[in-house]
Every structure is written in C-alpha cells, then in structure tokens.
Image 1 (cartoon, rainbow, N blue to C red):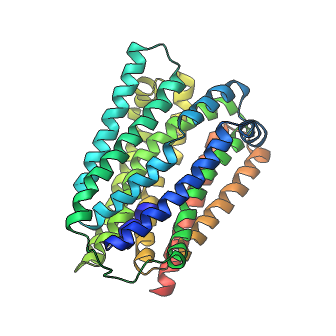
Image 2: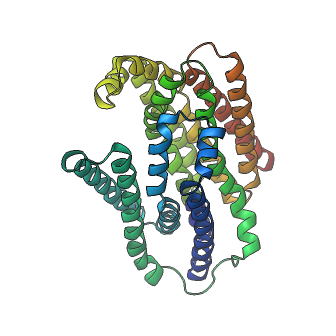
Length: 365
C-alpha cells in the first residue's frame, strides 16, 4: 500500500524525501528477513514444518526465493515513485514502466527457454526479479521531471512526521501483508486436504488468472485517492466502480462458464486434462472476486481520503481470521479437492472484508 500512501501524501518535495526515507528503511528490514529465510535453514522450518510443502518442491523453492532477493526493495522503490506519478497526472509513465517490465520478463523467459539449459525455477524467478528491477529504475528516472518541475520545494500541506506517517501507513501496510501471508496459509491448508498435489499444482495457475481480473480493482484504489477531491469526482468514481465490478466479474464468468476457460488451462497454461478440469471448476467459485475487489478499492479510497485508515486494517483482520478458521475447518471436514474449499473460503472472507469496509465508511460518512 506504499503506492496509496505516496498518492495521498507526496504533495511536495519535503514530503517525498521523507516518504523515500521511510520506504528505504522498511525495504531494507524486509529484505533482511527475506535473506534470513532464503539463505539459512530457517527456510526448511517455514516451508517444510509450517507449510508442509512437498519435499520435491523444497530445493527449487529455495533457489527461487534466493534469486528473488531484490524483489522487496525494487517493488517498494517503484511503487513510491508511481504514487507520485499518479498524484500529479502522469499515470502514462506507470503504463510505460509496466511495458518495460513485461518486455524484460518476456525477453528473459524466451532467452531461458530457447537459448539455455537452466531449470524453469531459475529462469522464471530471474525473469521476474530482472523485470521489476528494470521497472523500478525506469520509474526513478521518469519521476525526476515531476520532482524538479512540478513538486513544490516547500511544504504545501501538513508536514509528514514519523508519527503521522506510521499512524497513516501502518493500517495500510497490514493490508497487503495479511493478504500475502494468507496465501501461503492457503497452500498449507490445501496440502492437508484431499487431492493435495493437484490442488497445489492448479492453484498458482487459477490464482494468476483471477489476479488478472482483480488487478483492475487493485489499481483503482489509487485512482479513487487521486480523483476524489475533483469536482463531481465522487459521483463519477462510484459510477465507474459499479461498471468495473460488473464487467470484471462478467469477464471471469464467461471464462468460467464457457469452454474458453478449459481451452486456456489446457492450451495456454499447458495443464494436464485432470488439472485443467480442477482449475475450470475452481474458476466458477471465484467469479465474485474481481467484483468485490472493485468495491474494496472504492471504500478503501474513501477512507484514505479522510485519513482514517484504521478501518482498512480491521477489515483485513476480519479477512485473515475468517480465512484461517475456514482453512482449518477444511483440513478436518473437506471431502473434495482442497482447492475448491480454499477458494470458497477466500471468497467468503473477501466479501466479509468488503462489507466491513462499507460499514466503516458509512459509520463516519
């Protein structure tokens, strides 16, 4: 949620410099934790003992995690600068950065596929790490124009202090942290449910496809923060929220309820017939995900606009509690593939999170 914080708070150069300092400190701390897990026996405690990852995946998983060491810093650096771009009307720079990331990703993957004998985990994780690094470097170069020519050199708003930043940002930071942590918990839960290996094999492919449709909702959060103060902004943004929710869920529904989804899993994702069947069924259960994601972005943006971010963290806490309890019940009650149970738990938890965000805004509105 550093992107949201930057969009909301980077109103002048002194504020940007303080945000950059906070970003650097947080990124280095998180990178140190990443290194501690990836390069020490702690990895096996987390992956094997806590998550119960199949032993055949432990070695490749550790290698991939080691290669991905730059990820945290590059993502934070990129998102800080993207928030400034969005705040000051240069969202086209964000699109250019995305194009650079995708081109780098495709180039490295293609090179690894056709011109090297490296394993898939090495090629894939290297491609992702290099892609986000390229985008972060571009974002820093591109944002210079805004820093030099648009941002005020003097404070034009309430000064960002360590205390005010932590009070504003901590609830936002909990949101992606809990969301990121809950998915390894989901994998751990599925590994203890029926059809564990097919479920774990299908989950990244299904989640990736669902994420594509949800990504429009993720991006919409910063749009709400940036445009809400504009004349007639709230009415137009609410109208677009409804359109976004309906269209993204409808698109996923078309994939899930027609043969298109099966073709995608079979011929594009390259899954076996068994995994393609499991993935297609799972996709049906996930139809509501992109819809409620749009409304989460809407209500979160409204709360951020009022500098009342505590409601966001409580909503995520509700999501995490429901998801963990639901997955735990699945390890004891599920009699069908674990991925079916897990995705339904995530949908119910996500709907509960959305309703609490709505309640939080209505309570203050």
